[in-house]
Amino acid sequence: MGKRGGLISNRIRVLREECGGITQQDLADAVGITRQTVNAIEANKYSPSLEVAFEIARVFKVPLEQVFQYGKP
Amino acid sequence: MSFREKSLWVMLFAMGIAAFFYGHAVAYVGHVQFETLPFRAMTVDAPMVAMFHIAVAVLVAFAILGHLLIVLFDQRTDEDERDRLIALKGARVGGVVLAIGVFLSLWLAVVSTGNFGFTQLLLSFWVLAQMSDYAVQLWLQRQGR
Image 1 (cartoon, rainbow over the protein chains, first blue to last red):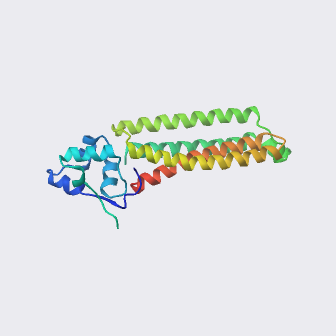
Image 2 (tube, chains in turn orange, cyan):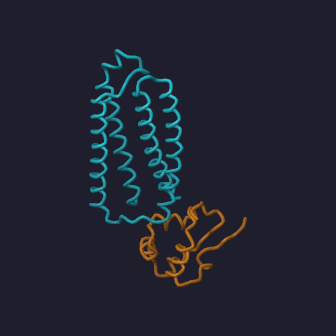
Image 3 (cartoon, helix red, strand yellow):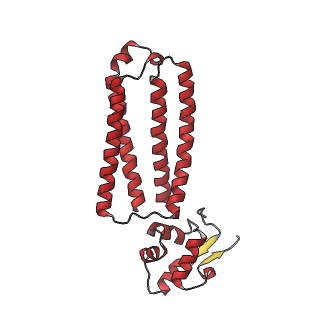
């Protein structure tokens, strides 16, 4: 948790657009984190805890692996 | 800018103001000792203690006033897991700075006859540790990590 997410990528920005243009603030409020943290996660600068990752997937109503991907270089 | 970030700027500013005030006040009230005694023989006297109390009051006043202003313009006071992790990283750096200060102060206490150098060095490193903590947290917040 929390280290720079070099190997973990995500589709949060795409999913926000697909779900009718949810803003970072909307997502942050729904998950219970700050907008700055959503921004850091989107930019792959911060890897969230499992709880937050599952909460984000729950907001988009998709499985976790459709939001976050783990890929070795 | 998040509430946490604004709060850190307030604390950094308040600590800087209080430290600046205390440094100048001690230099002013201690000028007789500075002119008559060697540094190692100087002691903390009542006016210096009074200046310390005023500096703490200045710190508390600026911190409360600053946070009141933030809350007035920003209702979001929530803190999340990333903020807590950043706070831990800041505290780790602050802890290292404070540890260095403690050992330097102990060395000064051993080689001094008065308590002035020991007290001021330890206090200076505590302020430095706090400001390092805030600065590291602000840097990490700005980096988005």
